[in-house]
Amino acid sequence: MKDSATPGAAADFYRSIYGSECEALARAPGRIEFIGNHTDYNGGRVAGAAVDRFVVAAAGRRSDRAVCFASALSPETAFRELGDFRKFSGALAWANYPLGIFSVMTARGLHASYGLNLAIVSDLPAGAGLSSSAALEVAAALAIGRVYGENPSATDLVAIGRTAENRFLGLPSGPLDQSVCVHGRENHLVFIDCKHLSMELVPLPGPYRIAIFNSGISHSLVDSLYAQRHNECAEALRLLRVIHPDLENLVDAPEPALDHLPADTPPAVAMRARHVIREHGRVAETREALRSGDMPLIGRLLRESHASSRTLFENSCPELDTLAGLLNEHPKVLGARLSGGGFGGSVMALVSREFGETDARAIADCYESVHGGRPEFLHCAVTGGAGPVSTR
Ligand code: GLA
Image (cartoon, rainbow, N blue to C red; front, side):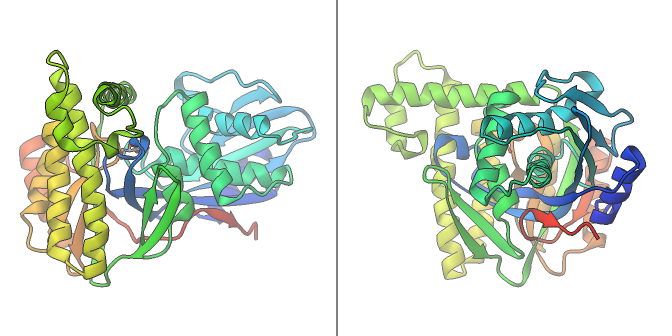
């Protein structure tokens, strides 16, 4: 699968579907969440990195008013008339991402007087917690923009993708995924301050790389569980504001305030808040540890983050716990944790350069003896952010 999502493959796929050459190509990477679990929509800090698995979008104009979305992973093409933003369902539900992007760009002033063809190729596994949806949104926004003579800025791309998720798709996600996808840089972590939407790029220390293990577990209720966590955090903020009326975001709450919540507060609400407040602190500590080169501390923070997801935020699952447990005991691993929304998906590990296929196989063997199936080991490099690519 790796290397299948090249600009050439997208251009070929476009030609095979639409019988003409595409006019625009754009490529967007997946991402890992390095640390900062569920801090983004709580107004906190988070760190991620773009990884070299991509979604590539090829686009071109049509002479009629049809809008067509094709994916190499889907046997059917999705059609709508220009201006018709009714959602797709079933096997075509994936097309709601580019349709949502088109809808948001139109609402923001994009003028489309002719139809559109879009063709997508990807080597980014869906449901792996690596943000294939943000990559699809950003690649589509760049390609669609070019067909209609627009060139959205990095800030626009993040806003368009997040608005499409929040308002069109109804997912209450934060700015992490699109921000890393757009602002990623080779061998750098992207630290995002989600309150001010400011970014800092911090080099990943030379002797380390990122290893990703995709559990292949994708919880059927992942969207509703994510929304439930979002609501629990909102409830915690509401209750804390009774004690601290000026509290802007959950991450800013002093942890001891949680001991003064009303007696009938559901225990889960206090647990979610405790996770978010501590996790936010861990992001700041990680930034400091990178500054001072304290790698053992970074390993400890990654392990603590996973433990907190498991016990307080309850967004882990046995498969992710097994992977994190095996990796966290491995001598070539500094620290490992679930990455992204949770409830399945991937574990990412900060590993020494010597960690290779043999080590990954040994981890997969142990995992298999417990859970049956084998996790997918993704050899990923930390890469640059999304952008247009040449059509030649
Ligand atoms: C998903 C969301 C992000 C973020 C993470 C959890 O990836 O899309 O906005 O909330 O989960 O940190």
